[in-house]
Length: 70
Image (cartoon, rainbow, N blue to C red; front, top):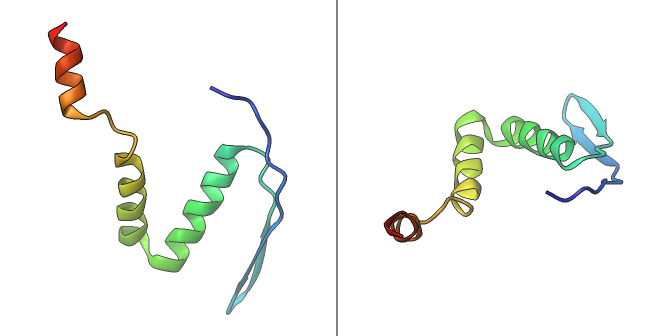
């Protein structure tokens, strides 16, 4: 796991106002991104999007079976 910091200023304008964020870690950036995604697209669409991203990093069944056979 790498250690690094993020220096970002995120400003979001909504019809009802605006929000400002300054994430310092990847975790904080992810929380902000998911929050904005849910607000913009809704809970189910955001869940589907995040699931698609996480599937890219899931171990492949063929690789897991090959490792278990060893």
